[in-house]
Image (cartoon, rainbow over all chains, first blue to last red; front, side, top):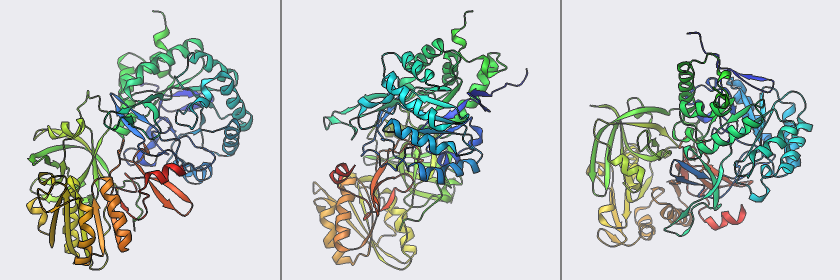
Length: 310
Length: 282
């Protein structure tokens, strides 16, 4: 049997394999590097960075749920200056492929962040997080409306210049995710990241109050995987040529394969890394074995396979 | 006071065999074969263990303070834990039999700082929070420090004070909320008098956040150093999830600091204990 070609492409950029970290689940890579070399990953997707340092929300920030968890971090981070000064050079030094995730409170903030990134070498793509559920006003999540989604992507597109692929990260908490996908594709994205967490709540029946200080939080973990598969399937069906970075509860190679069959060109490992720091490595090896078992010599032949008529 | 460390530079993920699992009052004393990991574990460090087995719906690790680490014992390197079977995860762990293996990551987090000169130290533990203090007592005693231990709990059988743990202690005071052992009342009520009597210069504490907060206030009043091992809910234990943070005072404002990386052992005077202050400022 010939060797598996495991490489994948997002826009103009090629990645040695399709297993990425999910934004917010690997910080900026240093913590996981104690457990495996980051060069094993297709890419490290960094925690969404904003222009200024951000404290994030009060605690409790986490509630475990059946096969999942709620988090309410609130985009805690060092701000773009410190990030570019410390985190990016460290990742480059460690030969990691880098996808930088950015988040803003306003359309302008996304533009400012994009302008800061255009001069930085060593980055393979930009993920535009327009779907974080843990911002002050949930009603303002950009990816809940086609118009605001378009505005953000246009702002990033205008400011980033060059060939750096833009990936828009969308929320599954919408009536028609295909409509949102269409809006950002029309605005010029090169790829989509599907899905961000779903908004949820846990009430502590002892205290009889919401368990999280921020009341609501983002649900992640295996509990949401069928939602991810559905979203990826629908979007891939509508736009088969747009690469999708799939994520949502992937913990095994089988799970990753499911997202690939639905239409994902790459698969990000998120919450699974919390329970198991080497989860991404395990998923990568298991996926490679599965692809080979199923007779695929080229990973890209498996993308969206579930859509094909027999 | 907290020495900066490279992130988890000694941490490893291993399959650790359960060598012993004994019920001690309401707790379980468990011993795990961990090989070389034991040599790197210092008092205050913790381990994070996967619970529930492969098909479990419990997706997050559980963090446990190391009670004792023995580098080269008859069973090789071992780490011992004192586990309270409160939740689903700790109940599962306590149900593991000798010979079974668990997925364990350690040692994690900061360890207790040791005074460079002889000092009168007081070690304060609430409930099974006493667990990491016995190994600390041994280190302090070997350093020439006087070690006074104060252990408190809601009721007598919830005080964890094994015989072998008491060897390094100069004095042991017990307190119980219901008066079934030692001084009747909350542990923090007994502390000011003991500090005056014993001439305490450094406090080490471990236990519930409410207790740590009360001790931090006392340490401030007496103007003595206070290192505490905090307990915030963790999702990952290795620094990526940002859930286990506590608010810490910095010159340029409040920062949320990860208790798995910059803790669990922290300077009690730097933590902002009043939740309302934090909520108002965020």
